[in-house]
Length: 444
Image (cartoon, helix red, strand yellow):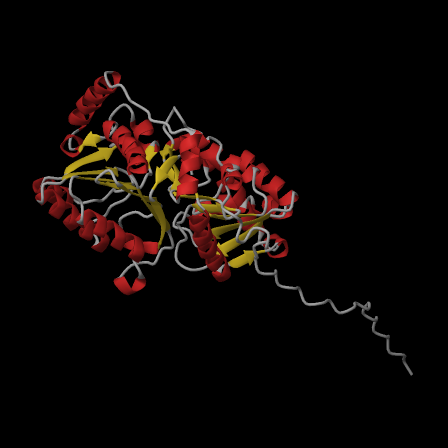
């Protein structure tokens, strides 16, 4: 009788509890309903004397609301319309703006359109010719010029501005294409945010940025041949040497009067290729370093500098609730790979990361402590920091901040939170791709 070999017993392993889902992001009660006192608001303004006074500030969410408000403002223009955008296309949305600008010019309104050459590549000549025939002045930012190909292609104008009658200012992240229209309107439903400000001071601040960019742009007829582009560039350089710019600044006494009289304190912050290159970056840093309760950020292309990462980590370490919403499906996938390279570092420092699972999240907003808000075209990446012209509006107003906070929390509720455990499970191929993408972050 042969003895059957006994099977080795499996080691006893206690049942593992189910992995708990992350708790929903919640704003501390101390921050909700913070009193709109001067001390609280001015805490987040690095240079209060640079703020202007706005009669009102309103948040615009997504394409339908934003485009309706912009087209209505153009339709009611009496003296001037200045429109600056990175991308305009000959689609449904672009056609609406083409018609609105043409009608305004036919009424005798001075209308100017400035768009970026690379951002609006593929725009048919017939689209622009129709605007010129209607009396609209059109200029193009940095068309490629022989001998300066790298400079003209890499340095882009990413601003989105609309100034009407030097009284109304629109600024934000929306381009003029069908990508931002609702799916019901034959669009792609991209998620984005804009702001509209009323008041002569803020509109003139936006107009100064427009004039700066217009002086660096090329009139459309000159973009047709290389020789015309080169001659136009020489003329613009001579004109800028002879031009003296005037800058207006408002003191802190005006800011105090604004906060006590019901007006809104706003700063229109624009960077330039050399001067004020770090202006928007420094505004972000100052507000983050002074946060007490929460920081909510939505950003389309998120590859922050070391100083921004360090400031967010320090805020989380002192008990500030920090959350960042990013797109899961980006229109520039390599940027998402570079961004995910930083996830592990950010999550380890207590920064919560959420990914928007729907159509592209293109917003560039932040709100801190129901006090400081920013809406604009500036991404927290190297391209906005080094290469592109950008503009944001920073608003010191409790009502505006509350509206942006509620909108951001509503977006977070639709997002999927990234956890350390789930992020660590990604494959080695994805890790390698993220490392390579991050190595080229300067050019992304």
